[in-house]
Length: 131
Image 1 (tube, helix red, strand yellow):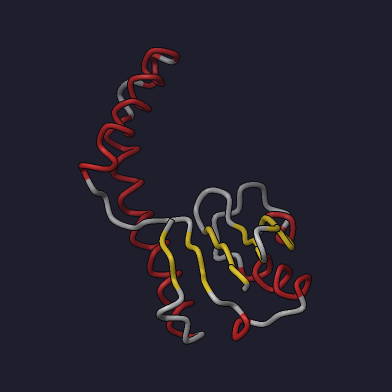
Image 2 (tube, rainbow, N blue to C red):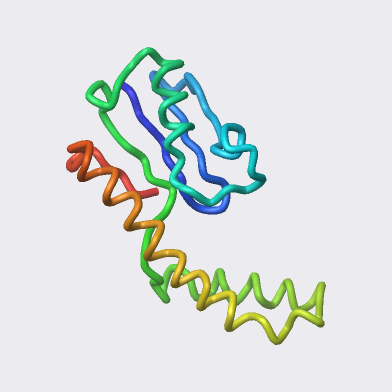
């Protein structure tokens, strides 16, 4: 069984897992040479599949490291804790929490759309797990 893990968030990349072993893993920035490149990790996906000598048809599950949409029950306390920690450590940053949350919501929709397009174009519906 093969599991392809994908994240297109702050550290875009991919990994391939089989029998509870990491076969290959790569960060997209290694291919683009742009630190923390937040793009769709097509190079990383291609690399891990090549290293595992498999193609997308061989992948049993796709684990996606981004659960789109702000869910207050799941996220509000986490965001509040992060903001409070940052305000404690860096009081000069206190005026910025609203912008950070707005940016997160905007980024969330775009990143999820990238993943949905990948799933649709590669006929992977039914094999996706959101992590």
